[in-house]
Image 1 (cartoon, rainbow, N blue to C red):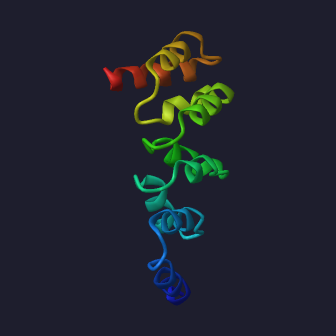
Image 2: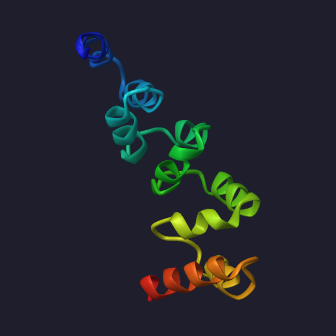
Length: 116
């Protein structure tokens, strides 16, 4: 089961870091993908290229995630701010005041409590 992935890792080990982390970020194996999306050596373009919504938060919490892409995603879906480790406080405050549902407003208030 792991033999093909170990063989791939052996080949990748001889590549530059950016290729190593880019390839791991595209992996179907959760362990490798999670490690790559959390790693500070993963190129920002690879983090921004993550298209699977279930991995967006992991990639967006990486400090090297491109700021312009982060702002565009948060503008499109402000609720993502509640999942970030260090969200913009103004955005969370806006959700607490103007969230569409009571549940969203309460979740935003809890996030503000966590942050302060």
